[in-house]
Image (cartoon, rainbow over all chains, first blue to last red):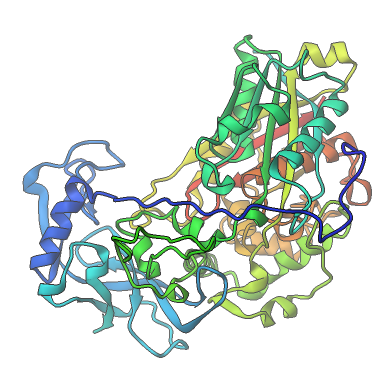
Length: 159
Length: 413
């Protein structure tokens, strides 16, 4: 026994209840800025193609993580804000482990004409359905309300 | 090359809550026990100290600063590895192999019960631009009764104020489990059997917190949290601390300790981009390849006697078993069904009870798993002793949403 005496009274231990003031401003980054500024004005996405491996990277990158080479300006391309559900799950718990008011259908969506994907919420009340392979389109905020963040994609509509 | 031995292990009990102790206390307890076990005085005999910790888990900025006193490292070489305990073992082994250090202490712990916003801290590990906002509103809840935002700017920067709408980040495990089931032909019931086995093993482990006699039916009837992931597929969190003392082989001989060698270790990281990362636990495959090579292991299934592998979610044990080359793709479920991975089977997996039985102890997971391997190789595992265990593997993943992990291989001398 490392401690000669241990606490046996559960009401005795005291504590300090702290919280962290930790607010950040996360820049979208060079590629992210271009991507989100495009979404603010268009109903489509951008992607970038790596010359070395041929992969179409989405969300767009300035460099390919596999090949570690820069992607030239001319390799930026417009792709539709549509995709196919690769995986989905019906989320029932909130961040505190308590029940969500409504289940949310969270999905990994393979974006058309790219080798990338995006996490998204599928707009549907049918939490029993198998959404695998479902075609979906990004439900974007009205253009004048877009702010250049992922929140501009409200959710994903089934096509 | 210098051979590295484990000369001491120490650990606390693992408990769901530890309100009577602070994090320093459990670190001190584990370290003191390890130093007594090794027969060393940290103020005199230990050359270097490593703690494996992550600021956010601890609730401190620059947690390194808070480490020296309770591990015996005051005014000595001391550093923190921001990762799982197995990364710490690897770093310690390399320090010894340089010849600069002879004896190194490695500590990792979890005091997760102190963390009131676990789900939110995990959410903060997700990419803030492309992934995290999908979870929902991001206003920080106000726990201390203090204003969360300055009066002049009372609104959160992004999102609404309804925190109950924010989805728990474990939804990512629901997605990955679906991928695993589809690509391997494994069923939810077969995953449930992992929880049955590990919680059963935990009965034989005095320090485990979550032992239970359950059937696959219990798991199947537990609520869907992130379908197909159910409540009992998830390892519950636990507090605890583990300390290892590693030494140059010659020191072990001088101390008259029967050596257990750290024969190999490896680590690997996948991309943080969930958009392009695979779901095949490549981090485990790559780190195992590195460790097998270092330990001269050619046929892991024949040369490894037992393994403690990451089971933070039931399907992860099966996925990791395949990634580590201990089962062929899609065959982990068959090994489980045939009893191969039971304590009395040919390849016991998680005899300690794993994270499902012991609890998820965050960055201490790899050391908890290594601890079990050492107890088994020493022949000190009591009723869960695997007979004639000579070579054991410990593997840990860094948890959601990471694609990183490490492997350690130990051999009885």
